[in-house]
Image (cartoon, rainbow, N blue to C red; front, side, top):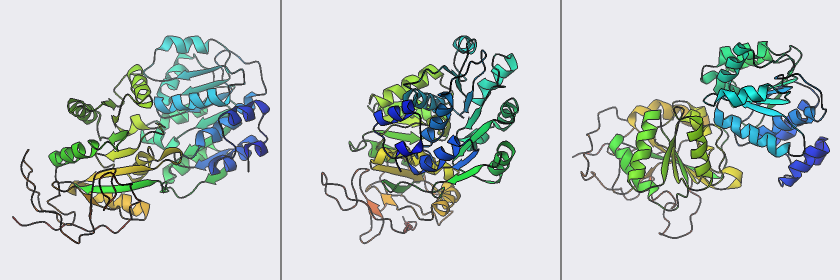
Length: 439
């Protein structure tokens, strides 16, 4: 199928063609015709599948039929969990709607109210909003949702994870009962299914691949770690490799993201942090610097990194392993974009044993394990005994054993490759556990 066969308005088809797109992705091919027909949609798809166009093109098609609206009363409302994702949706709106006369506004937390009030004082076609700030405007009666024709929930699962369930229900209750609803989620557990049943009317169900689908372009690696100092040593070794063109390093907390970014900067790397405590101007500036190549190492938390789509990210490093398998899939999907190869590296300690088991069960595979000569781990995930503390500057114990299936190498070098030799695709082999070494 081609975009020309989707019966899009000429202005939209021209914009899509300008982008160099000819054939829709699977999520677009299945979602767009149903949405154009006015059906509610329950779409289960990961980020990086082209889902933004899957809901924005039908929404913009509706807006090609112009209507005179009231002030502050949008016809299309897009809800997103984070400001970064909202910005991405707005960028897509401008790209695909470049040949349309659109009146749009963004209502985002952390941004000044005055420009938002000014935008809502005019007739509007489309609003992109985060739930918290939209609730503020509803309370202030500065926005009227009674004219909404299409309601879009992007990454609805993340909105619930962030505690926005009540806000979402309040917002949807303020929209007309006969609206069209497009519901997009990366995961569909019982909680999500119940919410979808409450909001949707006889929806068309679209599911693209298994939830655990990961691009074959992404090579996954695992490094067993003893403790925090060992992780820091490994990270310092890995990011020193120039084949790490750009990397996102995931940290569990905002404070740790700041600390790690400062440490990397002090080591001479172009590093910066990205997390929810930063104001919107600082976050926008950081993302702009990342896209322009001014930042090589971005240390981010899960929420802040949601929606980042930068094709030059060569590596993702899980400095802290996520607790949930879905977050692991989302994180490593930040690399390997647009058909480019990528590498995902995870640090795993004994405390991560259960989380690793959940991730591997979700993926249906074991993650191949790597070691760095001189930075070998001293414990096994099999043992629950305490690891001796690794002292700064202390020599590591033991050497890599000949014949072991565990692999050594730098982040950009495949096992067995000579320095400077072309990298070959690593094989995915069962994990081989280390045994605790004697003194």
